[in-house]
Image (cartoon, rainbow, N blue to C red; front, side, top):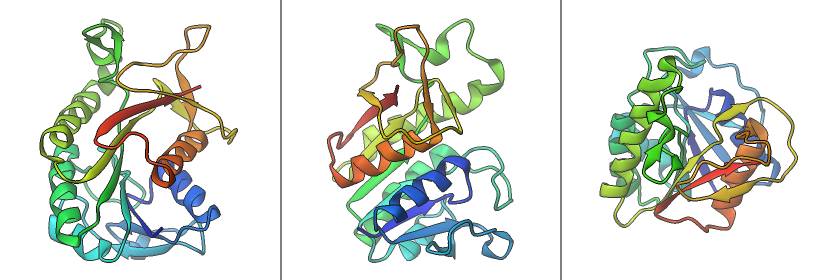
Length: 216
């Protein structure tokens, strides 16, 4: 399976790229400025592209089997202004259709997961103020995929509330729109195991045209 990863310089994206390469999948990493990009894996093909431009996505994705959108609204390793998550959602849908790539997977956010029936994490009183704009943008992007994804085989993958660098255990639990917590009430996942979940879903699709969440 040939996989294109948008925003290949990000922390989560790097783990996704390596997980895919280690399983034998050719990967093309898309960044805004390849000249300033420090390639972290010699097996990765790096190209220039704009994740918020449909024509650019179509050009870099020609012949691919799947696209992973791993961009961040924060400034990434490949520099430049932060990307619009909603703009990227619209561009990815249009670009994938133009390139005739049927499968897209989106690195999503946890803010729109439900902590109680009808109550999302982002609307909780103690949700960190600094993360709220990103969480709301992720929620808006998810609605674009739900509304406009149509014929595309999209999957939006929300991580646990806490996600950080760690170890690869190869284990995780999945849910739909619910925030997963362990028996101590913690919601967490490592970048590495989140990447495992992404590639597992690409290899064995179980959440097509819907959101999935992952956590320990």
